[in-house]
Length: 150
Image 1 (cartoon, rainbow, N blue to C red):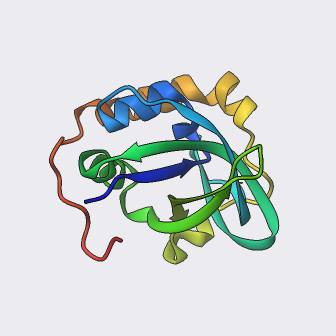
Image 2 (image 1 turned 90 degrees about the vertical axis):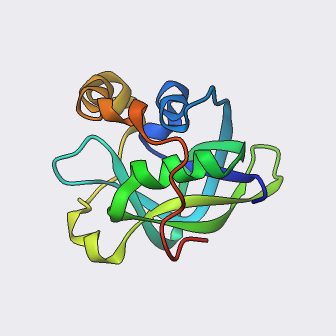
């Protein structure tokens, strides 16, 4: 399986959380995703994105993820999210093919109005999120990809 790049826009923008989920040290770089909007998820500290041709989402791009990291991310994201190919822009204008997790159609009713705020997450939600999702450090290291995923 070729190495992949992953665009993150929520809790996984934090390198410590991404590293815990992937099972190895991860380093990210700023990137932007055009054509999507980010919303808070009801009663959660994390966001979801949905298509919106007039929107842009700032996030972090992680490069060169292998099959193990992708499988761990699939398990972490669960059934609410669909992994999809996207194109992202780097600050210098370079375009990169990546994958990201889009909030699934069946769960759109859980997205709340307004923009999810990363600074607010860092200040108020990150500790709570890490406490709730402490199990991500124990994700299996060899789980195969979910059926139907790219």
